[in-house]
Image (cartoon, rainbow over all chains, first blue to last red; front, side, top):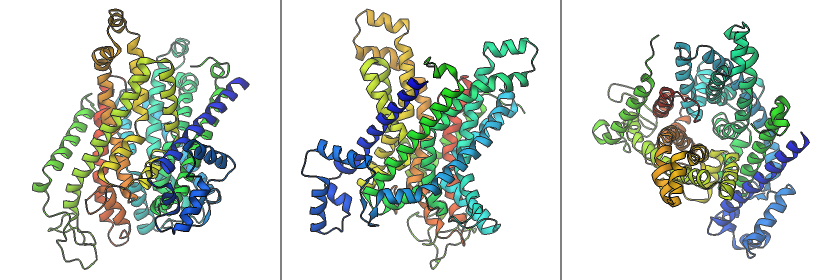
Length: 309
Length: 274
């Protein structure tokens, strides 16, 4: 188990090094003048000169990258030149709102997706399965920002049940959570349906059925346990997709989280802040995947004992 | 309920086809010029009426005409971005699966890194340092959405290289390029086509999302995502401005999804490509 955990942590760190290389390339290699990109087009020559020295733009690229990583590791993601604040501090202050929204949406999408997937698998290739498939495709096809806008118009403007955006009280969490969760719910339901259908064809399920267990009992007691595992893994991978949805959802609902921070940063061409949020999001995804990996190892002895499935 | 296996595919194909027709025939189908004020609205959007079936926006432009012309830009960007995506994804997936070893390791770890970055955020970061134009938008969308395709194509290519006919060709001395083009590629093609169809729904959504964040194709070109963004200012007085362009995006994305999943389902491998 320990060897497995260490392997996953090393992998996560390696992935983070890779992502830092990508953000570094976007911020410092692609722009014609990184100093202008970092300080904004309106910066005066003195500021630009100071930034060139600070970033070491006169030094070779590998030196710049090493310094960039060194600072990031020490929690220094640079300064936002629009807001004149530390990027790391801004991110930390915005993180709780995003965490609440993302976790609530994750929970809701699983709460909707799992029963839908089970229902579809129980009626495999019959009418309910087909209807649920089309329904799930409908859910994944809705643009997140449009769904949010419509929910805001209906629930906030006409029914007046919910506030028109912002973050005050649990009531304001409901519409953004639904907005963010529906697409993932459709996606998860299809994954679970496929996994369950595959599991139902396995020998151990046939054995259980042979013992006289009903189809339903075999599905709940035997197939579910094996079908859930890949779903957990995918939910971890899908976390990156969830964070993409967060940007749009937070923008629609004026939610004071990382997504809106990232949007405002791009809008203001605040490069250090943009790269900081991208890097931080990648770290979140890596951590989410690490948690999922450990959860799977704990649930499945085959993984924990080194027999990769 | 009777459900024919072809129903989903057919519905999807018809939806995609109808969109293509609307996009191509836009100048003949649109009742008005999409970029010009046609109604005297004095700054207020006008509700749907007989003259303007879907209403007009705050500048007096006809919403229906803008949605019809929007099909052009959305489909062009969606399909072109998919072509970029496929080029990157298929090249990386085929190379990794076919050559294996160190090449496979490096390419797949690179894919893992890209999978960690939220596509929309990464696209936003690219847009922040590049200037938004149609070309940069579709390159950016392609750059952030090839990972899934690379993984699926790699798995298919990997299984192909183990097949007897590929081994036989290799034993006869066929060079790698010939093995890939003549033996592996044709057998991976069906899954590539399905992934391209499904992937288009992804590029359409990503393009719409970027447009909504005002980071997409610059105005005055009518784009569905941008129309919704502009509508949010007026959603108290003119909710229809937001509703109809969103329905158009939904219709387009659903069409590609139905087509792709319908095909997979008929082939009995629904969910194997996600």
